[in-house]
Image (cartoon, rainbow over all chains, first blue to last red; front, top):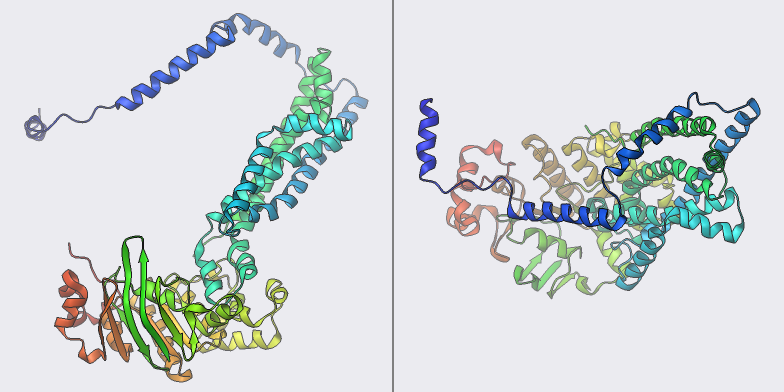
Amino acid sequence: MSGMRTAFMDRAAALPAPPPTFSRAAVVIGLGILITYLIGLGVLGVTPWAIFERLPRLFSIVLTMFPPTPGSEAHFWTYLEALGETLAIAFVGTTVASIFAFPLGFLAARNVIANRILHFMSRRVLDCVRSVDTLIWALIWINVVGLGPFAGALAIASTDFAALAKLMSEAIETADQGPVEGIVAAGGNRFHVIRFGLLPQVLPIFASQALYYFESNTRSATIIGIVGAGGIGLYLSEMIRVLEWQEAAFLILMVLATVAAIDVVSRQLRAAIIGAPRG
Amino acid sequence: MLVLEGVNKTFGNTHAVQDVNLSIEPGQFIGVIGRSGAGKSTLLRMLNRLGEPTSGRITWNDTDVTALKGRDLRDWRRRCAMIFQHFNLVPRLDVLNNVLLGRVAYTPFWRAALKAWTRDDRAMAMAALDQLDMSGIAAQRADHLSGGQQQRVAICRALMQEPEVILADEPVASLDPRNSRIVMDALQRINRHFGLTVLCNLHSLDLARTYCDRLIGMAAGRVVFDDVPAALTDDAVRELYGMEANEVIGAADTAPQTGAMPVPMPA
């Protein structure tokens, strides 16, 4: 034992014990999660090893997917058109959502609308709209405007305008107050403050969020296609239903490739929008 | 003449500014000094109503500043331009447009919103920049500039307001000594050249002594000193700065070149 170690150990003997690695709170929370998990398994009537018994079935499905194929060239073109439709649903939905979210974000921002009641109301309305999933909106809109891509775009617009408006209002509320004070002190009115104090700060954030939503909506648009809101999801659910796993796999790969491509492009666009090199 | 009568400002139980009575002659260069938390910023921000006084009255000539609302209040803010410690420019906007924002009170909203400033305003902005040796960087984005440059842009914006008073809230506290001199020189030129009243919060006694005609010392929200810089004796400094006094005096006597640095805290 080195001299330093001995010296420290002697000193430590006179000190109170070091704090425990796991605090009492951490132990209680950990146990709580474990117990809740076990209760959940009981409620669902599943055992953790049930999945292992069924794994061979999953493997056989995966095997029947190979090789993925569109079936015929005619199918391929149909699927490509449907993919285009899915993209259009995502794009139109996100755009409509952004157009509505932009002004609403300002209404829901505490530092723009000083009226507490109006602020509270707009916040709660947005929360309600946002908490209804896109899939449910799709089912609702299908009943209003009929099956097809229009219902899909409306479903995406419905959920996302509320989500984007909330993000927007939070960006406005956390915006740097420096430029705002600069404009106020120069004698600017409320509109000048919004135009120059807030807008330049929140616009890039908003644009980047909208892009991100477009990206994630490409996935959502596929899912809502399954309930009949148009696009490639319709074909995907059809192929799964008739157990055409090879074609289903091909469709999944098409969606995957598209999402990956959009992801790359939008990441670069977002970096370009947000990127404000200082120096 | 700017007159403060019995001005108070409280935040909860804290008396940030207590019973301040002052009258300020036009054309003076006034330094407001004191340790941080003494109420200097709070006082200055009440003058253009970025902060509301809890009680008391502020008048400019015959106008009751504390009673102004809406358009009149905005016009008053136009007439007493403020310069901030952190410049408060619009970071993503170019220098010229930042300077032109000093014209918002003169310009219809649609013109300002579209940055469709008049030819004369644009020319005036270039001239203001030129006066501070900044016309060469008119097209650069504000957030690409150094602190000293940003503060000079902020001064140009203030000049565009054609103000009668300039309130400078710790204008050099974020700057290095060289840039502090440049910015203080610019404020002094404006004061001498255009006869504008300048009220400047300063942490550094050295700068305050160099540039100001009159010093107002604050401690714990009260005005405890109000005289020409020559009258600021070591005893007066002790009253103003308390525990920090020796460091302030030492810094001013032995190392004037560090005058722009914040007063060091006692260890």
